Length: 601
Ligand SMILES: Nc1ncnc2c1ncn2[C@@H]1O[C@H](COP(=O)(O)OP(=O)(O)OP(=O)(O)O)[C@@H](O)[C@H]1O
Image 1 (cartoon, protein in one colour):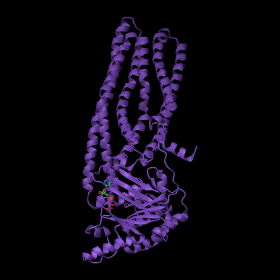
Image 2 (image 1 turned 30 degrees about the vertical axis):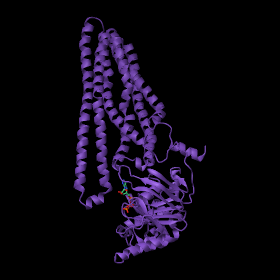
Image 3 (image 1 turned 180 degrees about the vertical axis):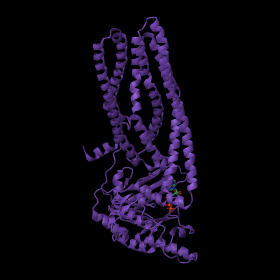
Image 4 (image 1 turned 90 degrees about the horizontal axis):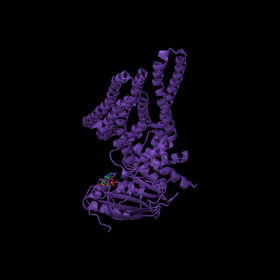
């Protein structure tokens, strides 16, 4: 099989995300059903043993028969013990396998989900992933075994009919009443399970948002606000869960009650039947024991129905997640482009963020040739970063197309596109691990030389080279332990390391001081030569890196031309307003804000 086909196969598991792996486990579940069935049959043994002892051994004092029967019943109980342990073990094995397959698939889906298909807060999505534990517990819990026991309830009632005749009607009515009560409350429990789950996700979202922004929460004294949101979430979830649990427990208790009453009923009616000579005393005792045995799983089944509601709510939520659009459509034949030359074209591109009303980009068109170096300028919110996001392919245009090397990027295999596009985004995000790991993130075959070369250009070597731990220095979550400028340098090194043909830098020096920025610009001037560079900036000092400038305003291209010409006209406009000459670094956006700009169209 070709490499491409096997990759697509990997991405496109053909079976349903849950039922497929459950089907793969059918052998293990089959063994569980077999073990549970034998356990149920062995459950008959004790009752028949007692009945035989009462009716045959006791009147005749048949000690030899008693010994033989006792040995038989002991062997049956040893089997029963072994099979019960195996039954639990089999269900556990099935749970482990589900963990390995379904758990991985859910995570893969999350990674491959399109950003514009994502719904709700990060914390709520994290809560959703937690739902998998709920589902997994359901399919690997001992309670599930109660389902296997359910048909055996009728086997035991059949056995009662065999030895006690009409006595069987008593447990039959008890069973039907308990099952009816359990089923009647299902819609109510189901609604509560779903509401409790949703409240749980909202609560989780508050927790994650607070933890992610803990420094800000503390420094702006927002703790009381977050605590109040958390407290409200906890109270709401607790209230809903308490009602659900109460009703479910009532069903479990009713099943226990039905069992007790049935046994009493069997004894009372049995006395009359024994009196009439219809059944023997042994048959009465066996019927009482069998009634207990028949109805024992009912409480478990009532509990199982409650858990099933929770599992069903989790399944539905996860199923929605698994059905969201992925970046890579497994049914599509993507183009493999190992090496891209770096031509970028925006053709009549419009884009609206999910949930937003206004267009972030409004029918914009431009071409950047391979190796061309372009700065994108404009006021805050004019759409500069959106251009970067569209080239990385994390968002798709609503209208028009973004082409790289004359191919719509939706046709290019996302992994190939990312391998050819190095990007430093506005919000730098590092991960726990060493500095080297952070630079080489996602690059499996990168050499130490390439890491070092990129680190030197980006300025990482300036603060890492002389330290004892060097590139092995371990960073905490999100790169904590480094300054903003140092984090930015690592992100730049990460973008440069694979020597991509396209380099997208979104305000790469916003956290640097003037001197560090000047050094970086000098190094970047050499390093970016021959690569397509798209630089988003508010600083004039970075314009040394580019030959052309595109200016955006409200999602439209309003100026597109040679750098020197545009810088000259900007300076002239400023001079005309008699503004004092700004000192380094000068914010271009501010300069442009008060300026009348010539539309290119
Ligand atoms: N995730 C998002 N969801 C909804 N709207 C967004 C999102 N990100 C950006 N926007 C909106 O899209 C528009 C363009 O945003 P963009 O980040 O591209 O601006 P920008 O020019 O890079 O601004 P800045 O100079 O402040 O970084 C803005 O109006 C912004 O409010």
